[in-house]
Every structure is written in C-alpha cells, then in structure tokens.
Image (tube, rainbow, N blue to C red; front, side, top):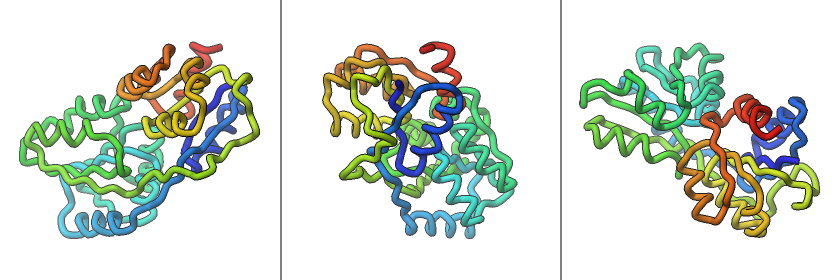
Length: 236
C-alpha cells in the first residue's frame, strides 16, 4: 500500500484518484492551506493599475483564487507550472502556457521568459515556495514581483484517511519539500528512510537523501494523473 501526502484540502481527492486507478493507497495530510487575503488584494490592485507582461502561477490553490477573484487581464501572458494549475485557469477563459518539463527549470526554458531585461513579471505562489524561479529571473535583470497567496500551516493532529500502520506501507509519495519535512517531524525516521519515495523534483530528492532515504525516484509532474502513470510504469 502506498502512502500519499497532500494538504488537507487535496487529500481525499488524491487518495480516491489513486484508488480508482487500482493502486492500493492511503493518505496523510500534515498541513492545511491558509490564504493571505492582504497579498491577494495587493495583487488585484497591481493588475488594476498596470497589467504585467507575464504572470506565473505555481499552484492550483493560487489558480483557484485568481479565477474566483476575476482580476486577470487578457494582455498579460500567463504561464503555469503544471497542467492541473493551467486547467483551472483555462476553465475561466485564461490563455495559459505550460512548459513540457513541469517545474521551475521548465518555466525558465520557455521563450516567453527570454525577453528584454525590462520585462515585468508577477509570480503568484504560496509562502515558502519555489525560489529558483524568482532568483534566476532577477539575476537575468527582469523586474519580478512575488505575491504569496497562501501559507502551509502544520496540523497539530495530521489527518489520515484511515488508521494505517507502517508494516503495510510499501512506498511514499511526497509532492513538496514541506510535505516531506512534516513527515519527518511526525513519524519514525527509520520507518521513513526504509521505504522507497516518489517525489517531483531533484531538489526534494536531495533533501530526502540528506535525511537518509536510500531509494528516491522523481516524477517531473505533481498531478495525480502523472504520478499514477509513473507508479504503474515503475512500481507495479
């Protein structure tokens, strides 16, 4: 049985998606999502005054807020880190581009971010999220503004989909560094290090190796569909 980690708001849907695909799965949510209305309003004001050349959205939580607040402008070029994020924007009529490699490195390779140094870029993300993207863009001379739409709050009592025990867990799926860190905060380190992990970036894999995890695989896409496909190809 696989153990998948997701924020509270995504846990049930992800576990059900894996089970519908025929993968024995249980789940744990060590974090919940708390939105920052002040940052959201500041971003709305920014778009109201002058739309940026490019807006980058790095998560489904941020995308959902953008479409519900409805302050995007058509003249802005929208980029999304992954297909799940892009789908939410597209459902609201936003024309959005997704890189083939669905991570920060893939975004940076897009020609839309290879323009003049005066190009104005807005990044909409969560607190404590990706730093490679803004750091690299600023180093290239771009003008970058970041809006932190939400933060991840540790739960005192993690939410589990059922009362699973470690002997039945054959692998762990972690879609962010924060998720992995919380598992090491909550659970027995030996139990975590003994099992194979699937994660979504080399950066997270390096953190896991530093903790002592011996078997780590990387899927370049954090969507349930991509993770399920990888597991069926490699772990079944």
